[in-house]
Image (cartoon, rainbow, N blue to C red):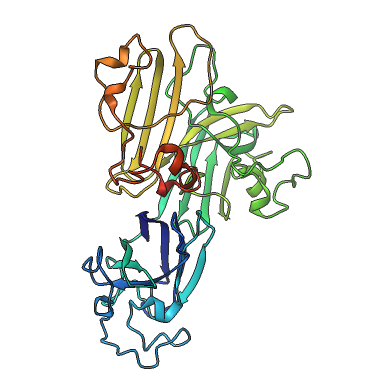
Length: 401
């Protein structure tokens, strides 16, 4: 994968079977705040052309191909990194996913001596060859995560694995001790917390919320019965409708392929919870546990003490700063005021000073400075001016904080 986060934003995925002679599928999802909608692109041996003007001498060409016979229909005569001659122009949208396009390259190995892994994807102007953006092509690591149960007599796990956002998720269910008490099971929006208030259930709706349903699927009108339709017709988190319920079973084992259960991105299930429901008329919640990644993770916590209390927990796979970060918040007031909604929130550049307790709200937390922005994005624009390019769909074009 190559990821762009400055001037041009988005991702380019390269996918090939474990055979350097097999064709490579490229999925490009790039956008820009500028007016350019097409650009040249190539793969360079290193970062040498970045920040300057591109010429063919930089193109990765391990076989010293002279370009004879090179065309969009004949890739074998092209330099390996000459994407423009093989595939045509790179497409740039004004917003994320507007110009998502795919290509097939028969001369772009991802393994072996001529591999383009760890090389540099360069995007440059069609007018004057000035370089617009560069990104390293880094090996992409798939994700594996599991939810493990060990309570109320139920033991076992549900394991999810996905090689990339372009692939389906494999779900492996292995549970014992259900004692014919269970029926539905779903991924819910929020994780199970470490503790709850006295008398509150760990799996209740105000603790782990409802089913993960980011696309707003209507479950009341024409919702298909379990296992009768394709994955996209169900809520993302409705596992029992996609795979079948646990009704009448003491133990369950099965493997399922799910095209609507991402482990990556803003709708990813890692860090959320799975709830198993009882087989009763109300479908009451029985037990729940969190979906935890198999990889080592790094975590950070922001703790609030006054007048807001609670914490924000940030979790990311260790040693991969490009990986998704899961954020879980639990916040309240400690001064007696009722709950409130609609607050803006951000990470600022500096740690707080003593002013976090200031009686004057206008001065409170002024010591934290401005929004954390190590990439120096949108330096000349106000927050309102760059907000059209920064939202939940276009996260790569946001200041990091």
